[in-house]
Image 1 (spheres, rainbow, N blue to C red):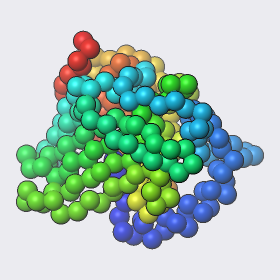
Image 2: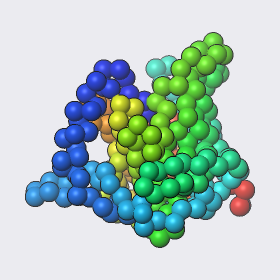
Image 3: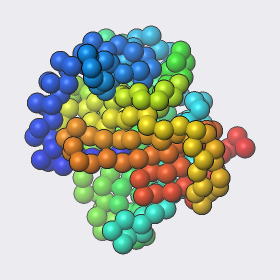
Image 4: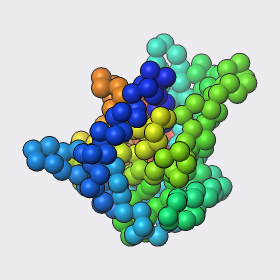
Amino acid sequence: MKHLTPTQHRYLLLWIAAACLIAGAAGLADAATTAIPGKKTFTTEFNIEGCTFVTTGRNPYFVLDPGHKAIFRGVEDDEEVEAWITVTPDEQTINLPGIGNIETRVVEEREWVDGVLEEVSRNFYAICEQTNSVFYFGEDVDIYEDGQIVSHGGAWRAGQNGAQPGIFMPGTFLLGSKYYQEIAPGVALDRAENVEMGLTVDVPAGHFTGVVRIKETNPLDPNGKEFKLYAPGVGVIVDDFLSLVEVIDPNN
């Protein structure tokens, strides 16, 4: 997940207040957008109360089966980067005030730069049975320098310090939909827009059809954006400069 800089943090609370005025009426379980006259905005509120959550399974573009692993490689700023995303057998309980406890699946991400471990995060996801949407409930983060943990920057949990869950991958991919993946004041505010579908893509791991493209932005960094590509039954195959080189699916 992208983490905010200290400068971005200072502006976040002002932005949240404005965003709530625009998007406060949104109450959609899936990633349909909240609209005001002549403009589409990013959905910030979802019908969590209408969901029964499960920790194992998959929707068309996201896998939560324990043992599923994806390995990525790429080059950024002349440095070789490798990332592993592993669906673990672990679960994490998230307490949402007014709703109660929700069990989530822990998905671990590890990232190395030039062979040196830089970050480990444990991300919390669950699938809404009614909509097949994958919700994101937060992450624990360890940032490394010289083999030692130096910070936990970017960590957040829904239900704490004003943070709320977002939709990470809608159960139905609607072109043009806009939705928040993270809603954590002062910490994380990733948002997604479904921009393309029906793509054919080749990466080192193979040839994929029916691929969708998602643009991720952050309101505190107006000039920043990343693109991710997701393949049916596999999940993410391109994450900005990283490409999928191997996928291990325990069900295949």
